[in-house]
Amino acid sequence: MAATLKLRLLAVAAATAVVASSLVGTASAADGPAPAPTSDASMAAPAVAAASLTALVFGYLF
Image: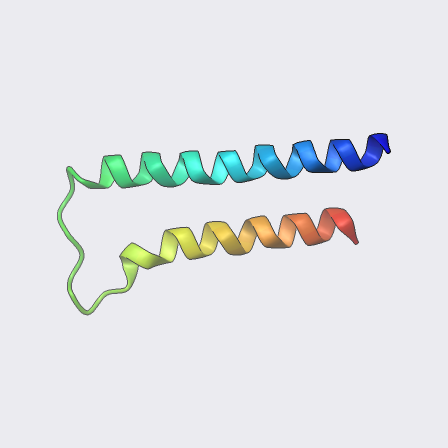
């Protein structure tokens, strides 16, 4: 029971950290030059963050 609660708290903390880092990255990127229209750089950071979080959660669970 306590392990389940710890796991839920860890998942909430990790999700909060990803959302916070995503918001900070978006706010600071507003001052820089825009990437080229053919570049997928704007979508790379959230995708990498989501993939990393998913890998960490699966590694923790299994």
